[in-house]
Image: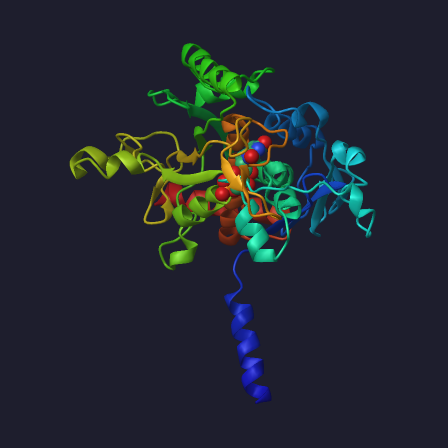
Length: 408
Ligand SMILES: Cc1cc2nc3c(=O)[nH]c(=O)nc-3n(C[C@H](O)[C@H](O)[C@H](O)COP(=O)(O)O)c2cc1C
């Protein structure tokens, strides 16, 4: 018996995947959010101003609610970084909720005064309220929305920024732009230079690369601001200079496309994920979809070249050296100023759904949060491939592999 248990434990350890692990904690109106990131090698320089700029980017965009005016997110690193560099131990980052001061009595850690609690009396269709209350056996939805809320994505952006700094050491970059808001869509393929120009802007409207289309998107948001409705849309995350060979077809759950799809889909309100031109490809002939291969390239990781990049940089669950392009499709925000029909949790009578201060359009912010998820996923795959306890070791292994690609 003892031997069998021992063998099982060893099997479990051998099956343990991913050198890089991360998770978050914290409620929307609690004292703070916290994010944990374990597995970043020692010696990575951490630029706190970069982390805070990423947090600022997540707070931008036309159509955000009053909450974003209260919060000015800033990252407070608690562990894993000393004298400006990672030390190989787990990194934890706290982001204070400034709104906590208004909620201390409504959401105390101790029992508190129940008369001061703020109930969510009727679940909002489209939000986690009803499903969460049923699951956790809560009489109403306050605790549900506190954790289901996308305030949580700020914690992901903080550790995603660390993942971006790690990737930058290997020459990789991740950014996003907005393709659709409501019924307005940009149909051009937006190249890296245009995305970078957007990223440099100090004012973010809807993070769309075409100013005229962006104005149309703003008008869509103005319409729903007037009518008490909300909007969804589509963002695209682009990762550049990713070497061929991240992810693998060898196991279903190690495929890079599957990992990216799960990472982006895990963001609040994202209801579909597309890699490259995946959706259009389903309706087209193979000869017009697949990216023909040449051997003329002078730059890049190898001399192989592609006529275009419909595959979005991934074939067979493996990065192929082209830009990785992942789109996220967001449903419209579910908290409406003109609420939909619902049921009162206590009386079971038909009432309008609860309303609480809310965003009406979050496509640019969701794009920033998705950049974080893409960066964390790529960093995870890169560390699984190149390993390393120190950045010097990781970079040495990475360069060795790049040389192997050049010699191929
Ligand atoms: C950046 C961001 C901000 C959001 N802000 C709000 C909001 O203010 N009000 C709201 O009802 N939903 C908001 N959402 C969406 C909800 O968090 C989400 O719809 C809800 O948690 C239910 O999860 P699901 O849509 O994934 O099913 C936001 C989503 C993102 C990505």
